[in-house]
Length: 340
Image (tube, rainbow, N blue to C red):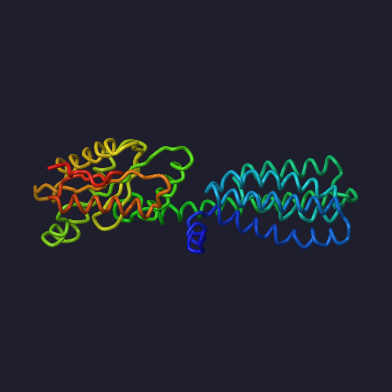
């Protein structure tokens, strides 16, 4: 995995970025203590530290290798809760200091409800088993400050998640048509690639380009062109199956991501969309507006860039084959164009 790929994944997978940051900080923080305890022959705490480092490192490795950052994040959150209880007994008062950052970090590693359950369980078990190693008034202060820290972390995590979801919605939607944009498309294409590798379920990609769209802008102005784009997006959305996804790729190009096992199924979907445009879209003056469509089925171990390039190549053939037609790229090469 090269540096560019690492940066791309960290930039586009927020959960992976958080897991990597918190996991790396935890490993860097605990490692010096493990070394010190080995030198000082404190073998029980040393084994505990090494175990924590190993589990966190394993979670990071799994997330990067599988592309699934949610599962290891949740597992590590519960593991951190268990180790917080163990640390309070093995290390005494020193161990309780680690409880605060551990429980606060959980609100960023996993869903808030899981983090809250873990925090409540840790506090209850430590108090019930005497793991705080303090007098009664100190134990009360420990419990109150921990509860306040957890509640503040919950509120902060809630507000952060809410704002991030709003920003993601704004960043992933096309301002003109209201459908998902290129940013959202790339994320979904990467998800489709992971699904194929994990479950063997194939996806098809269709790129649709309005024919002679520049003439509409030139004759009637960009405002009329925008109206055509909005109506085209609405027409496509109404013609797709519930699990199909629609994106604006740029300009007058749109992309449909659909579950399709073979080129024949993908062609049938594309033909339905082509006919919907031919029969239901005009330039506002009674002149029909048609669309050319290129498509491709995702291949095993294929990059999303190659997948897009194959569909774009098929669109090129559809355009230069007379427009208002469908071309699907296949394993054997390019199929003959279909359409009118």
